[in-house]
Structure formats: C-alpha cells, structure tokens
Amino acid sequence: MKKENLQGVFSPVITPFNRDFTVDHKKLANQCEWLISQEVGLAIFGTNSEANSLSVDEKIFLLDKVIDYGIDPGKLMPGTGCCSMTDTINLTKHAVKVGCAGVLMLPPFYYKAVDDDGLFKYFSNIIESVNDERLRIYLYHIPPIAMVRISLKLIEALLKKFPNTIAGIKDSSGDWNNTQQMLDEKWDDFGIFAGSESFLLKTMQQGGAGCISATANVNPRNIYNVYKNWQKSNASYMQEEIDRVRSIVQKYPLIPALKSIVSHFHEDRGWNILRPPLKELHPNESKKLIAELEAINFKIDHSSLDISL
Amino acid sequence: MKKENLQGVFSPVITPFNRDFTVDHKKLANQCEWLISQEVGLAIFGTNSEANSLSVDEKIFLLDKVIDYGIDPGKLMPGTGCCSMTDTINLTKHAVKVGCAGVLMLPPFYYKAVDDDGLFKYFSNIIESVNDERLRIYLYHIPPIAMVRISLKLIEALLKKFPNTIAGIKDSSGDWNNTQQMLDEKWDDFGIFAGSESFLLKTMQQGGAGCISATANVNPRNIYNVYKNWQKSNASYMQEEIDRVRSIVQKYPLIPALKSIVSHFHEDRGWNILRPPLKELHPNESKKLIAELEAINFKIDHSSLDISL
Image (cartoon, rainbow over all chains, first blue to last red; front, side, top):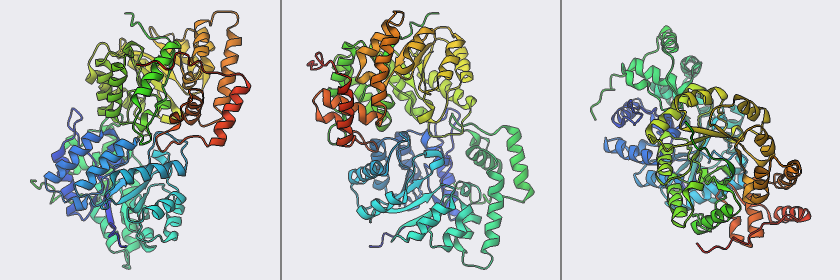
C-alpha cells in the first residue's frame, strides 16, 4: 500500500524568542511562510529549533498558532519525540489531529542503556496509543545528541509490524555508511532523509527522499535546487556550492550561528535570542561568520519575507 | 544565614505502574510510607524513579496524590529538572507550593555542547522565575546519564548569586575525586550527598550530608544505620555489609533489578512493570538475583509495609 511519503528538503525551523524567552509565534509563522516560498518543508520542533527547550504545551500551542496564521499543515513534519511516552503520545496525537503530513520522532533519550526490544515496545506503544491511520512516523536517528540509537534491526521490526505508519527516517548520525546501509535495504515506501545537505546528492542518487537540514534555514533555495536537479549534469557543482556555505556555518556552534545569520540578513536583532542553556554567538564571532559568508557572496533572498500573515 | 539543609539518606523512590503504564499512585504512597518508616527520605522523581519517562503533568498529579495520602511534604525532595526551562519552572513552582523540603535538579540534558555560562543562565532563570524564598535546590550531577556536567565553577557562581537557594548537590559521577574536591571547598551550608551508599561513610567522615541512593529502595534501614552511626567503631563493618548488597544488585540493570527485588520480597508481581523503553528483568535473571541476595541472608523488613493509607 502506497503511503504517499514525503520527499524534498525540510528545515528544522529555528524558533524566535522574545526577551522573556517566550516564543515569538508571529515571527515563527513568518519564517515558516518564507521557507515554504523557498520550496522547503517545515520540520518544526527539531533539534535546531531548540525544541527540547520547549514544553509539550508550548509545542501544541505553537502548532495551532502557525496553522491559524495560515501555514498549510501538509507542509509540517513536527518533531514529537520526547523522553516520556505520555508526552510523545500527547504531542503526536495533536499533530495528527491538526493534519500534519508526518512527525519526526526521536527515541526516548534520557535512559542510555536501552536495547532494541525496549525501544520497539516504546514505539509500538506510541503508535497503538495514538491509534490513527493518518499517522506517519519518520524516525529520528541522531546518536551524537540523543545518544540512543535507532538500529537497522529496530527499523525492520517496526516496519514489519506497522508498515503503514513507519514512513521513513532522518539519519543525523553523520556516518554515510549508516545511510548507505539503509538505502541498500530498499525497504518499501520508506523515505530516507539525509541529516544534512552534505549527503543530499549521494542520497538522491541512491533512491533517498531528500534531506532535513539545519542549514536550510539560511540556504533553502540552493539546497532545494540540488534536490530538484540531482539528475542534471551540473548537480555536483551545485552540491559543492551548498557544501561551501555549510563548511563555513559549521565552524560555529550551529544554532547560534543560524540565528546570527538570520538576524543579520533579515535585519532583526531579536533573532539572536536563544533559550538557556544555549546562548547567542559572541558579537566578534558573529562578525567573523558574516564576513566569511559575504566573502563567498552568500545572500538570503528575503524578498518574500515580510509577508503580513 | 542558616538554610536548615537536609541531611540523611534519601531514596529515589521507584515508581509502580499499572498494566496500562499509568502510575499506581496508591502503591507509590505505600512505598513512600514504608521508606519513611525505615528512616529514609523521599527523592521521588529521580533517575531510578523512571521520572524522565513521566510527563510534568503526571509528576504534579503524583506529588499532590502522595501528599493527599498523608505523606509529609517535609520528607520530599522531588526531582524537578527537565530538558525545558518552562517544564522545570512549572514543576519546581508546584513542589515549593506544596511544601517540599527541597528539589533535586538535573541540568537540561538534551543539548550536549553547553558551557557553564549557559547553565548559569539556565539555573538563574529558573530561580528568578520560581521567585520563592522557600526554594531549596540540590543540584544533580550525573554525567554518565545526563551527559551535561555540573562543574565546581558553576556551583561557586550559583552559590555566590543565590546563597539561600543553592542548598547542595547529589554527586552521581561515580568519581570519588569529584566528591572529594567539593567536600574540600567547605562551602557554607551546602549539603553534599553521595550518589550512592558506596561512598556514604567517606562522605560523612569529611563533613557531607548523607547519600541519595537507588539501593535505599531495598536496603533502607542498613544504609540509614551507616549514616547514623558513622562515628561508631563498627562503621566500616556496617559499610562493608551495605556494599555487599549493592555489589550484587549492580551486576544487573539497576531499575529492573530494584523492581524485581521489591516485587519478590513484597510478594507483588505488579512491581515488575517498567515504562518502555525500560523493561523488566528476564525471569531467569530475576531468579539469579534473588538467589544471590538470599545467599547472604538479605531480607526486606516489610512489617510496616501494608499500611492502609
């Protein structure tokens, strides 16, 4: 059975805060609208959205808000995986209810010595509790941060039990061998997203679904173009171009760097606020980052940014 | 100014679940009552309580419930540290409101590359938002699981800014050198709790406050006796006795092992339920564990267990 899986480039949308650390929901909706105008889907509540610095209630409120502002839920793939089963169930239920195209689900990440069997029970319980045939789960494999892994064996077991629900994976292991192994499996209707644009072309060449990348917050159109034109003769050149931007950004702490870039090019100082324990780049670092990007003629096309929602 | 800090032996109370993974709150209150009868304080919502498999709403509900059942909030030191600032503030506010003696606070543990300055901002924001002079925070240093560390420099900075609120620490690093360094600082009115009973005698000999130990769920009275009698001549012998029990228990996955022991000695099969991704011991493992404990004549005194609350 065809699941009509998602494909393309998604961005873990960075989250704008007010001075008191509440979320500036209007600005978030604007950023979502702009990303859609750049052909990029919305993996809101990702790692780079500082999602784990938000409560479930805040996430539910924001999901409703961005949809109220007019964002198409069909473009949304919110992160809904929390430490606790109950939180994950609540948030996932809500995401399905409001019509999100899919959810990106971290494994429970506090307890470290968990095995595949325990994780299988966890995900099974989530799926059975949400109990909605519209649910599409993209598993989120990010061992450098979550520490808890999603193994090939686990994916296989879940696909076998829930073929219509387990829709794909984001592989943020940073390990191409892992992505390659998954692509080699050629599981039916299972979308494999690279965890960043670095592996986008390779992923597309081997039948993957696209990428979900933090850098898509600042370089969406060019990343999308690699996705769209991967079969063209100039695809490797385009891949090199997006690699060049990423190689600069990833010299800095990623979330503060993204916010610093958006703040600079969108001319909005407020974008620099992060929720503790994260914090903004030092002004000197920020200047250096922007200078490096300007040296390669990097720009953000924000012609369509100031949409009044 | 004297903060009347807590001292003694605390147990991260294990959490009993029903078959549908909801919490059996009556059984939890019974376990709390029993631990108090064994002279042990209640660090509910600790790591070994599977607290990070519970939502904040569930924790608030349970806190109210155990107090309704008659548990003295003066015996309670709930874990209130979550990934998100907003969750930590909500839960901590509630704990203070209902009169808990203190709270045990994890650092935010999802984002890994955070520095002392970011953590200082995080804890400062929690304290200023809770904004209650009754708040007493025991920092929770458990790098093997939280991955995020609480450094001596961070403690010093927090003590300087919030001398009446920062009340102590639980050191679950498993590294005696770290505990030793903190004891050497001789900070005023700062209670240093060993993260397990293994270092209890050493901690007491150097001016520490006691221990907060998972094993206190099953061996409370004997651990308490080391705390109470650390100056007696037979203290090292008593320490060896509690070490012997621990050395058996910690050969197994800790939380399932504790539940297996309680289930066996309290003759209550239901205690074996864990929330996924954690899972109960295999019956063979469980039998082996109980046999090892019985071989050293280990018993749980549950004469005062079946209190009708």
